Image (cartoon, rainbow, N blue to C red; front, top):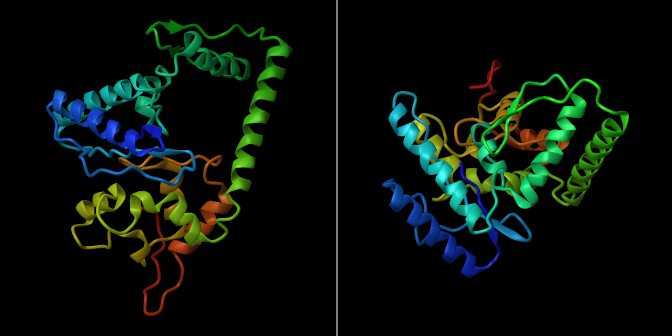
Length: 265
C-alpha cells in the first residue's frame, strides 16, 4: 500500500491525481487513482492518498510489476515533496532513502542508535547501495547514553500523541478514527474491497458487521498487518486503544452466534 502525504488543499489533490495517474500510464498498469479519487482526511494538517495493491500467490510476474510500480510511486512522490505515511517492510529502505536531506542525516542518526544498542547486529544496506560495517564493540558510554535519551524522547512523543487522542474515548470512535478510511462502508475503501474479493459473499466484508471476530484476531492483524494492510505500532495505536477497538468489533449483538475460539484467520 502506497500512502503519500500531501498538503491539505484542493490544489494538492488535483496535482496528486495527475501525477499518480501519469505514473500508472507510464508503467502500463491500470491506475489506482482517478479524477474522482479522494484522500483520507483523518490527519489534522495533511491528506493521505491510499493506493492498495493486490498480491498474488500464483502470479510472480504480476507481483514483480506491482513492486516496480510501487517503487516508482515512492520515488515520484518524494520528488514532489510527498513523504510516505507508512510502508511494508519490503519497501522501508526505498522510503528511507527518499529522506535524504543533509546526506541522509536522519538515517545516520537511526543507524548510530542501532549500532550503540546492538554493536553485533547484521550489516545493513544504506541508500548508496554499499553494505556498511557494524560498529566495533567499544561503543562509548556517551554514545549509548545519547541513544538511550533519544529513545526516551521518542517514547515520550508517542505518549503525548496518545494523550492528544484521548477525546476518542470509545471503541467506536477509535475505529472511525483509525480504521474506517480503509474498512468503512461505501465504495473506495481498500480494506472492504479486499475482503469482498477474499470472502466472495460468504462472510461480511465490513468488519463492523462481523459476528465471528475474536479480540485476539483483531489484535493479531492490527499489530502484524496482512497483504495490503500495514501493521500499526504501539506509538500509533496504544494497547489500551487497541483493546477498545477489539471490544467494539466483538461486542455482543442480539441473535448473533458466539465467536469461535482458535487462531486468527
